[in-house]
Each structure stands twice: as C-alpha cells, then as structure tokens.
Image (cartoon, rainbow over all chains, first blue to last red; front, side):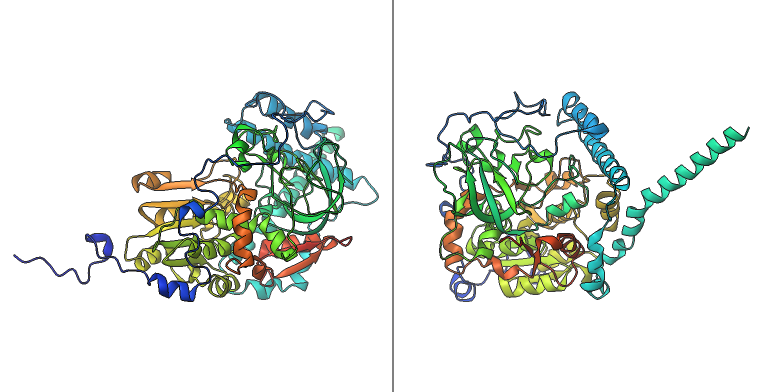
Length: 196
Length: 364
C-alpha cells in the first residue's frame, strides 16, 4: 500500500511541511528595522534577571517617608514600605471598610478585594450625598456630551460592541432606580406605620 | 500643588500626558481601592519644579520623561532589573509595584493627568528628554510604546515566527512593529475597529484580521496558520476585551469577575501547541474566567509582567531615532486638561476614530 498524498494535508498533521516565511532579505527590504533585535542579547529584557550597572539609587535602603496617619498596608508586607502615596487618606464608612480589608485579609483572600470593591461603592455614595448637600452638586457623566460633538452614532455604526453599549444606561442608571424605588417603599412603609 | 514628602522626591509640572487603555479599567470600576478624588495618569512628561534635599541627578528646570513605574532602585527586585516589581514603594500590595495614578492597590500615588505631580525617587525613575526626541514620542515611551516593545520580547520570538497580536490599540501597534525587529516572519493583528486595523497595516506593516467578519476568529487563525496556530501570541488587550458578550456582561458590566478574559482565551486557543503567550494587557487582582486547562494541555509558555520601562529605554531610544519604532503615529486626539471628561468618554467608547488621546495642561 502506498502512502497517501500529503499535498492537501495541513502542516499540523505531518512531520515537516511548514510554509517557509519570506526570506530575511525580502523582509529587511519591506520592513524598516527588520531583524535589528534578532539576537536576544540585544533585547533589553533578556535575560529576565540582570544586575543593572547603576539604578541611580545612592542608598542601601531608602530613608523612610514620615507616616502622617497609620498607613493601611497589606499584611503580606513586613512593614509599611519606606515610600508610599499619600493621596486620599481613608475616611468615613468607606475608610473603615478599607482599613478592615487591609488589616484582616491578605491579598490571597477574595474577601480582601471584595471589601475594597465595596469600599469603593460606599466612597462613591458618600461623595454623592455630600455633593447633593452642597451648593454645587456633581454632574454625573459630564463626558457624555461628546456623544453629540464627536459622532456617537456615526462612530458605532457596524461595530459589534455597540450591542453591549446599549446596556450601559441600564447598568449606570439601574442602582439609582433601585435606590429610588427602595426609598419610596421605605417612606410608604413608615407613613403607614405612623397612620396606624 | 503636591509637596515634597521624601528627600528624594521631585515635583514635576506636567507639560504633556496621555490616557492609557488601562486607565479605562479604573474609569469603569474594575480596579479595587480606587478612591474618589484620585488623580489618574501614568503617562506624562514635564519640567522639574522642585527637588527634595537628597536629589542629585535632577535640577529645577530639567525636562523629564517619567516611567509609569515608581521604583526605589535598591530592593531585591530593582537590583535584578525588575523595576515594575519594586517592593519598597507600595504598602497596599506585595503583588504589584508602584504606579502613578492607578488606585491605592498600586500605592495610592496621584497621577499625571494634572498640572503638577509628585515624583518619588527622582534620582532613579525620570530621565532628561533627549533634545532630538519629539514630546509626543517621549510621553508614549513612558508606557504604551515601552509596553508594546516589552510584549514582543516576552514572546521570545525567533526568526521566521508567526506572531499574532491581539488588539490594535497603542500597545498592540508597537508590539507588532517590535515583532518585526525581533525577526518575525509574519505578523497578524486582530481587532474589530477599522481605523485601528488600518493603522496596523500602515504603521506596523501587519496582516490584519477583523474578528467581526468571522463567526469564530480562532478557527480563522488556525486556517491562516495551516492549523498549527501562532508560534507567539501577544495579548495587548487586557480586562475589557470585546468579542464575547457573556464575558463583557459578567466582567466589565456586572463585575461578577475581574473583567473580560476573552483576549486571554483567544490567545490560549490561537497559539500553537508548545508556543508562547505574552500578556501585556492589564488585569486587576480579582479572578477571571480563564481557560487554564487548555494552556496546560497545549504545553504553552505564558510570560507576563508590568513593563520595567526604564530598562527598555536606551535600546528603544535608538529604534525611535532610527525610525524603526514610530509611537507618535498612533496619536489621534489632543484634549485640554479641562476637557478630560470628554477625553475619557471618547477614548472609552472609541468615538471619532480615537486610538490614542493626549492631554495638554493649559499651563504647559
């Protein structure tokens, strides 16, 4: 019995039949710089670990930045790192939740991250309430104006992701509607209780 | 205005910044511990306005480009060139280093989409912008371009490899250009936005695949690679990948997982057995629905990291100067800092053919 003709069999199914790429001369002529980093030794991240000659650091361990409040830190760290960001110190209920997430759970625990996500939502709600109580309330989603000035409809024509853009208003407005509904129900319940 | 908080700090007046695709993960609530009032922005250049008492390498008035990583230069990881994995700058997490304007999960540093920014370890991170370099190239080298170049390196490309780049955004475009520099024999870029695919053809000389045109883009990738799959797949999309409605709904929209894992799954499916996947798309710490079993069964090598930007620069500067890498070709929009809400919406919804928006503070 003779071997079957492998002419129509794709490369994956036979030993060594791969279509050769264009020659290096051809690629060099067509692509600016083709092959200049062909030698891995010319690639800056090869090998992965390498001792840089000079990083600019003139210390063995950096001087410690003053800690103006007990800085929240991952319990996987040995200590608060010598340098850290000081933006938005934790405060309010969101601050309590965030500090608990850091103090109680390591980065390996999903609870750590879920509490931080919850803290973000609480933070947003706290700021909205504060803003509504101020003379200059926040205007949510100010960038939406660009839907009209930058071709919102035109830009999306024929795009598959436009399907899920349609649910954005629901995702954004949903919690507000649910919150308003809960508030109405709550007020009605209280009013009925008072009438009795 | 920020103040000097550590003797090796500088305060930089921002002259040009950019919005990165990964900023959209913050914008859409995918990164835990993103606090109200946080200033975003990890791609910026500027002029040194103040320096701390121990700063030796910079002076007031120097024009500097600042890597998106904050790093000490002296810890175990920095000593081995892993600047993005510095352990001395982020008390909030051990898994990730310090990043400007990228939530408290990366250290709680305000970022550069601002008029002024605090730059820690001024002797270690920033570099004076070479006279010959265009400001728009300089700002893109602080992350997007460096990450594309790094992504191609993680692929460990050898001469003649077929390289698939998922995503024709700023990182993917430079990854495609870089794949050629490392000797790729074929470069195929996958996206669905026409202006980006066009840019991949003109800027990166790549073949392109519009996944909207196929019922299943992975099957098409197999057909185009003679059923082997790609030798190397560079995943340059990250946690908000389109292309799978269920992933979009459970991830970016409803937050039932850490984002959409569509691009990761396409990379796993599209690579050839024994091939390499390089992941430079950004993901947060919350788990994703990834088809890990197929990666195991196919014997794939998975390589990934946040880019150690400064390590890329000396070689990249040569490539930019020689015209082999052309980051500023991808810039489509320039917004004033005051217009930043519109800039985020346009970039996020990909309106008006937006590929890369820059932010120009009025004081610049």
